[in-house]
Length: 124
Image 1 (tube, rainbow, N blue to C red):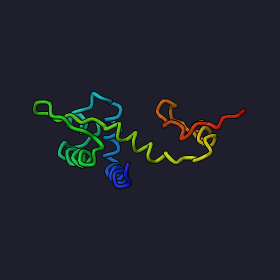
Image 2 (cartoon, one colour):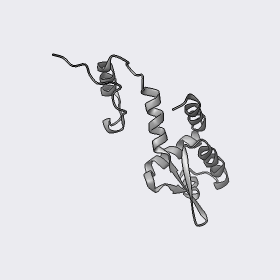
Image 3 (cartoon, rainbow, N blue to C red):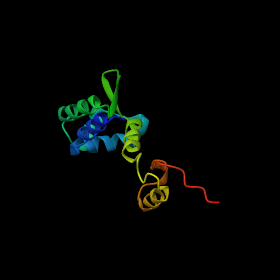
Image 4 (spheres, rainbow, N blue to C red):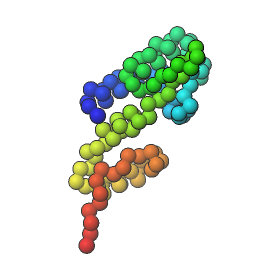
């Protein structure tokens, strides 16, 4: 991932409304939601939500597909995983045991954590 893409993602999600919308879409997974459902769930006027969704689509944080007269939005989870990998790819470089310690301290499920940066050294 390039630094420009990473900063674009962060800028897109720097609004509390957009962050709430993204997290809502993450919970929905591949099913996604139509704009009106998102607005209702967040207690926002549809026109306000459309503005935020458009910005998120431009940043590629969410994808959109047309379904008849509705637009269905989905979180771009692969992009977010790429961002996490970009942010952590140099974690504990050369000292993988430190990464393992940090993972153990995380409140995240191990299933959603990125892989350790490097294999543990072999002991003989």
